[in-house]
Length: 169
Image (cartoon, rainbow, N blue to C red; front, top):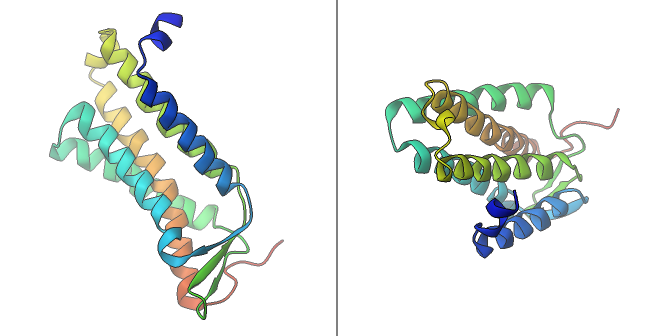
């Protein structure tokens, strides 16, 4: 393990630190400008897609599997785990977003999945050529993206109604 960490470029640790800070910000209640609220979901979707395409190339099968994972989690998450107490204030073009630790966990899951996959490839681990490796990883990356898409869909709904999306239970 020390060898793996020793051969990890310093920028990877900087990226991890930045992602942790970003995730910790999501744990606080905050008011966010409309465009900024969509930045995190967009960035995480892009990071996830880069994970798929950097490992498996831009192919119909990889993108389709990624999209299947994204859609499945986005639909389930949007209906089963909506963001509660989300508000949109049209006059200031801002959202009130309640804090949650889940975005930090998903951000870290994306990072560590990408890191572990990079290590497996660097070590020439035979699992990377197993027939199930690529499909499972594409769906997992897509599922991570789906979580952020589900949150973005809650933002869209709140901005259309202009009111509190869901009351506290």
